[in-house]
Length: 578
Image 1 (cartoon, rainbow, N blue to C red):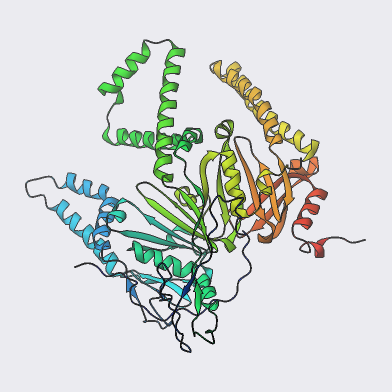
Image 2 (cartoon, one colour):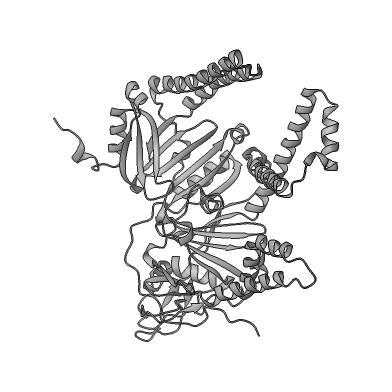
């Protein structure tokens, strides 16, 4: 017997949401997005009785608007539903994976002819997985999305529907085999704590897609229903515009994988693997020198000159990092596609684990272009969205805001311009911050590295440290000079087309393009050394992305002028008048 779709049962549609302000990112014209314009077709329907629902019947037309709400009211006990029954297969396996260490301990401790402890442990874990499914339920009412979970400690997590900012669909390999998707709702508030994410793990893939559309595209459906004209006096026929088809902004070019090694993401994988091996060696009390492969490798390197051995090790590391970086790039961004439909952006990607993130454009507050120094050297970059409802700086979670992975810088600029609706912020020439900012770049770099070099020289002279340490200190001082010069070259800001553009950094250069309409306040930050130099850091606060974006080392008068020009009237009560 096949499992019924969780959301098949039609219920009354949700009431129309309140009017919202115009979204920030405007639709991209044909010159920006190379997609053929699609005429808005009209689907005829039969005569409409007063008060009857509109049901387009043309091929490809949107079916009758049957809401996927699981409850038509907010009554406490109305409309609760369970997750997909297929999770009865997934939850026990997930629990087994989490507690594999405990099960191994039981296997070792209970060794014997009648060792039942491992079986008891597996049975307990399976029961925990089953209980997890039976004690988790959810519902979507006209005003709330709610998840109720727990057996002994019952909890209910509720999110108002008007707080929904993004909807993320993720399917790992096991989910894909069973036709499931995990749905995560981003609100900009409730998802700040990892343990309090509103997640439905999991629904059938079709049900998850329909629920996502219900939460984010409901406003578009209401607009289309409002577009129904009065019955023609002669024919009695009305027409409904079909939903706008998605327009592709960018797709992954397989040739872009050549940029992956320059992101150095493989270094993280190597670090995790080395840490795992070190922990394994410590736990098993194995001497690596007694392992045949390790002993053979060290013997071979011992017969080489020191410089030769170092070069061989570096070559191996470079090759491994490049291979791991390319593999991680393909796993994360295979089939990457960025598209626009109605008032939302859709981002889909992934090879084994697929992920589809939907962002309301009215929640979009700008974009970030990131250029690590090696990636910048091959004219590459990557772009992220600045939006409410998505985390920033949390590893895999950050991937939901990716507008384009590592790719040619010219392609990144074009995609960023298409998303924001204007080509100027990614390409505008930035205003320099003056001689005092340049002097501060050099003084910071030389003072820090100079003090470190001096300490190393003292330790070499009086503590018999190897001479390599002071030499390394001198080399650092020499490297600090070009880094300081590069940091100043990359420092700048601009105000154009309603966006505050600020750029900084050297090892990782970042250009932030923040919509001034999304700025909710300003801060001036001034360290002791900045006060002596007559400089301040102007901080724009917002509810999106990192929640604060810095314009570094401006003269105070320039900072006040920039803030006032960005948000006219906001600073007026605080500015002195003659």
